Length: 337
Image (cartoon, rainbow, N blue to C red; front, side):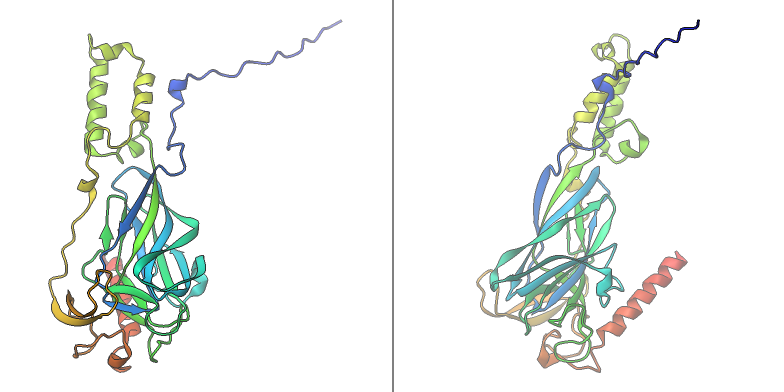
């Protein structure tokens, strides 16, 4: 008679805590930031469309855009997002996702929060097109600027680029408030963004290690050399423990300065004096004021604001054609590159 013994259960493999290194921080968002763009109150109308990028110069796992702040007569407000960029999507509502819809009271002086639901998450190196729009009839819905440089705002984590203004109270409409085209090129978002950052944690992998700043990488290299040296107290520690300690350190532990990861962009060289309608200055200057902007902001030869009715001329102000030509040139340059 043959006996069959039951298979004994095996104990699970034991793994020391020092080998259980996390890849990302275990909090949802560690740091919360408010960034304000420059505000020259150049124009008011219905909407602004622009791109926002998550930079790849720091070990960021992702950023989370939580609120957009704007000012103007506001009214029925919507915020839309689209992957990558707003380019060639300014008439296609199907390419956009609605992340805010609410009616807000007039606020020409103070910024008003538009809560993003769900929040927009961008991984390191990713970008998104944003479109903030007021459905209020008239030309006072939203404050925005003329473009003054290649970048509207940059900090260690994000980059905001210039975009286009919309002069129709109907989202994505091709028809402007005064007739003709509805889009104005070379405009900038005015307001504030509230966002959080989730940081990547160091691990001994080349794709992770290279994302950390220079001083941090030098610190890792120095300590590892000491760990291998005879007579050094660090040699008494197992390598896994050393790696576990590195894993717990924030990216700026070695003294790296976040400001060193911000590129300074000078204002465009071609500037002109222009008289604008500073009726709603946040700084209390009521009346006419002067500011600088590029000579191509105006589409004709007079001194009036091209986003207003008294300066509109359908023959001289074909912004949509200009945008299409610019995009064709960019595509050709990419193909040649």
